[in-house]
Image (cartoon, rainbow, N blue to C red):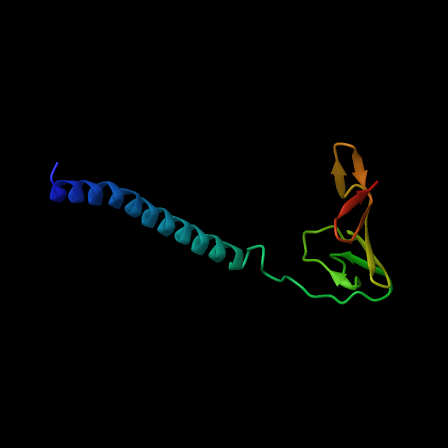
Length: 118
């Protein structure tokens, strides 16, 4: 095999993975752009629906107007409460709101890992 033939063979063989890599890179970039657009949409996960500062003690939540943490219509009038003591916040759900295979969940503590407390 001559040097020219060897050169062209190597050029063709090495250009196929490069073309695949570019195609893969473009696919990943397109997926990221689509994912970001979905997250930022009006009904996406990054949309802030409300900002409520929790006062020390119990902060009721639900769709009633009197609740300090107001949820939109369609939610139960009494959804539960956020109990704040210093930096610790415990969510206490109203009866029957959350269930797991192990039974109903009544409280959830905010810390480095969320743990359901039956």
